Image (cartoon, rainbow, N blue to C red; front, side, top):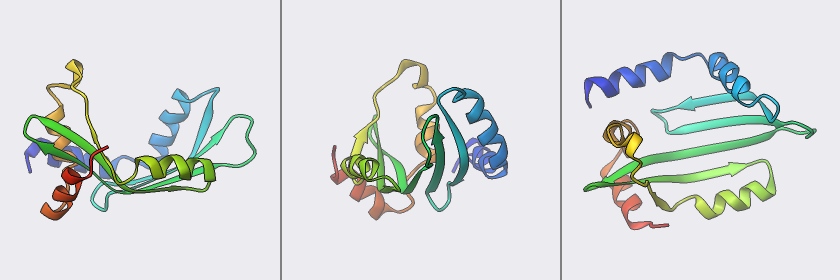
Length: 136
């Protein structure tokens, strides 16, 4: 793991959830309100609770075991498990979970894609092999 990746992981761990919620709510003003958030890069888990304007109940989403897999010059993103407290969203997440999605080459991100790939690299070789065999 590079020094840069180590620093980014430390920054992610030390960033308070309240700061993320505050910034997200500034961006989402007039659309939704982020009410809860957690992100664990080491355990590969993320949780989001959001309240859409005009809706009475919050929407919750759990993501587990996600990674970026490098195959030569190309990169793929995979989420192995995803669920929600809404049936329609569960159905949508079921269609994308467990499939490797090719990350398109975006010129503005070209210089950073290797760092992103290293940051979200699959934890084990078996996990990487599974990602490469499951295409979208």
